[in-house]
Figure 1: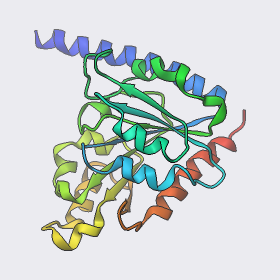
Figure 2: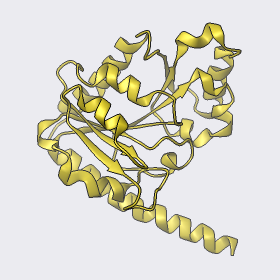
Figure 3: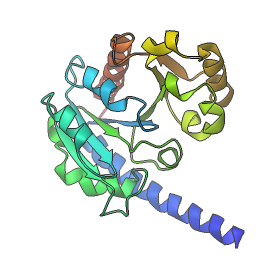
Length: 227
C-alpha cells in the first residue's frame, strides 16, 4: 500500500510538471518573467508586494492572487492600479492549500500577459504544499517573518531548499521578540547553502529598495534574453 501511494504521488507530480512546462512556454512566448511568491499565512507577502509592484523600474508587474476564498489581498493590490487576477481554490479545486500548474493554467486567459513584463503569483499561505508544485515560474521567493521563530528552515526544509530568495520580514519587531536572527540564518544555510537572504520590513520600509531591485533584475534578465 505504501508503494502504491508513492507511485500515485509521483504520477501526480509528473502530470503537474507537464502542465507547468506548458505554462512556462506561454510565459516565454509573452516575454513575461514569473515569480512564485510563497510563505506561511500572515508572513507579510501582500504587504511586501504593496511596497513594490507599482514602481519596479522599467517593469510592468501583474499579480495572480491565490487564496482559498475571498479577494481581500487582491483588492488591496488592485488599489495600486496594477493588473490583478484572483484565483480561488475553493470551490473549483476543492479548497486546496496551494496553487498547482493546472490551477494557474485555468486562470491564464484572465491574465493580461501582453500588458506586463512580470507576473507575481502570490501562492496560498502554506509552508508545505506550495513547495512541491511547480507552476511555470522562473524563480521562487519565500517570506519568513521573524514572528515565526528560528526553527522553520529545519521543520520545513523543502520550502527553503527550493527558493531562490528568502525575505526575512518584520525585522522592525526584532527588539520586541526573543528571536535569534543569526540562528535563523544559520538554519537556512544548513538546508540551502548559499541562498540569498534579505532582511526587510514592510512596515518600516527597511530593505524594500533591495527587494525591488532584485525583482527588476529578474525581469531585465528575461528582457535581455535572446528570443
